[in-house]
Image 1 (cartoon, rainbow, N blue to C red):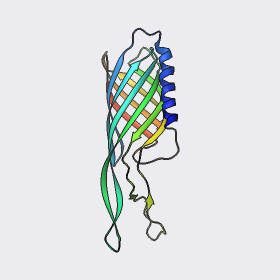
Image 2: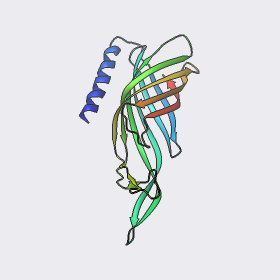
Image 3: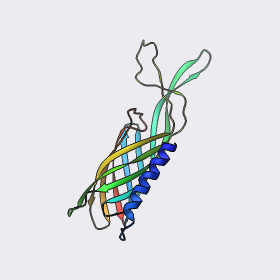
Image 4: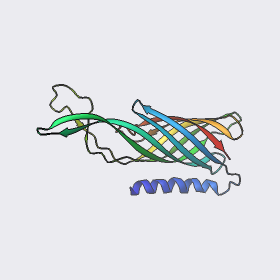
Length: 194
């Protein structure tokens, strides 16, 4: 937890150094969506503030809906019952963007930052790749909160002076994947600059 807070403080303070000499800052509000798999969908809101013509800081908050097969044991003797259980996660991303400004309507950018995912504490067994006759046919996967660093690429396509289409993809810098917080996340949305 302390490592994440230090990383966020570093990103925000480093980008604040660039903001000191920028009188014409703009703000961008984005509504985005991401369909990460067949069992999840996401909608979110992003708030970005220009620090310089090339650098900006962004806060993204999303609501993701998922469902998972959860095994519970009922009766005596215990019988395993699998049911689909819906649940929600709430990711929060803090990012610094570096934009490649140019004269066209397309503005590509690179991003780096941290991600926090608020997930429910479900301690049941989740069915994954059940093999008939295997000695252990169930795998335990605990849901819970997650912290990670991330990098990304994206572009905005300016439709008008204030509205733009936004496309991006972010990748987490870890090597373990969970279905409710995948390593790679593409998204699309609309932005309003003011």
